[in-house]
Length: 458
Image 1 (tube, helix red, strand yellow):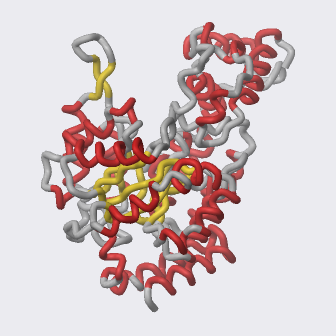
Image 2: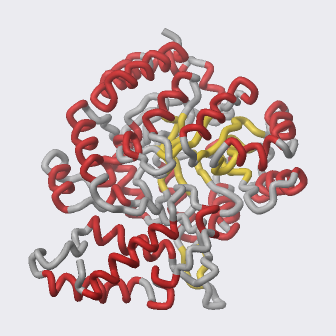
């Protein structure tokens, strides 16, 4: 069976069996592994060196691409000579060296990450290594200025920063709808330019990242016949698999549609903005009963890596302990079995009962014109639910103490002038949210809840 037919078969199987059929997909993938390495997909690595198989290297679903990829949106920071926060280049270098030592070779960045400094810091770290040892994924992040001229300037600046003659994986950044694609790319003429760059070899693989409702995603799939997407980056984790919520599309549907078309999947947000690394105590205990030495985050990464059409799983590993934990998970990778998939689905169903905001802390909504710390408010609220400090009412055990502690911690986490009660529902923040969160409504809901705690009217 060639890989195209294999992926179509596996996607169809997943559609019937859902999570509980994933182990069968993996079993077929392992049987097809030898044939896959001879497949045309080998060309997707941009002629980079194929890693040797070894226990201390992350595995590969596609030849030449480590299954664990590095998301460069949140590099470690330090205080500069002027007292302002700057990227800690020494720490970045150490992280990149450690990652590459263990077979991580896919590095994902953008001209807009870390106020434009992510590409520079990533380039400094990577250019200390031979070009053939790393894969560059960066983006056309033309949100504020999508003119043809500015888009070309952004693209060429990325090439210049990385001192390279090609980009291995180039993405149209964060498509939100068919209209968004048309406005930023379809009507500007930039797609013709990018296709010419691809034909010339300066772009090895052309794709897009997407946060969209089903109709928006389907519209991008309809364009596959025209543009022949080489890969697509989607938000995929065991919560979003079936329970994406809001205007977002379930990852199960997107993964299957991409697999039907033989389009490799790059996974972003495998931890759902860190939420799947900090589960409630009772859920952690269920996972620890099976894998006592492994973190809650490792389960999310095992889920993401357990699908055969995944090119790489991005992780924003800000600190060495994050990197080491993920290397522990992937260097001796163990795909989830059927009962483990079922357990994660049970946990996902439990999570949908909690009133979480869904914020991933991307900061795209900032700055708020009225000074509200939107991610800070959401982070405090979500963490209180996850950590079990959520105040339910007078019937709660130790209610008075829980109430006082909650209000004190809120004031400590978010200064009063930046709290939810200052929102006037202008809606400016909603235009930038890739999660399509109804931010004013969520801020209003949280403010009402906190006011009820203050007034003891829960």
